[in-house]
Image (cartoon, rainbow, N blue to C red):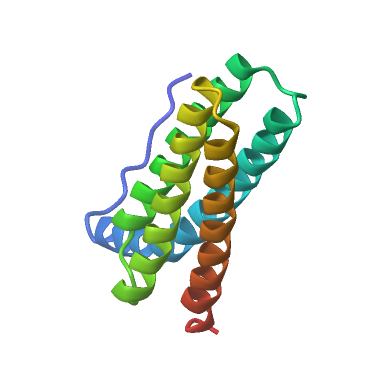
Length: 144
């Protein structure tokens, strides 16, 4: 049995593109901000586990590397989203970048077995988490 495939009219395609572009920016920023927040919390918890001796160095280092990469990707996604307010979007992106940098510093400190530097990176993660939460509230307050 042969099936025919309907082709969308040319007038429909610009409407589809407009619809996708109009909803994806805010959704992307929301999704990536939440992704960053949960990844950062995992990095904090893993740092705690490593500092207490409950997580081996090779596991902590590998996981923190993955967290840093995930955070860097989330930051790029936020930066590339079309903002309704560029300054507020940039505040979110900056907080996510700080999270990624702190996770990378924690990884490097774990590899060097430097407890104090892991503790400092963990404090930086927590401070950037607070900045992300504030920037998120500020960004989405405008849309309500």
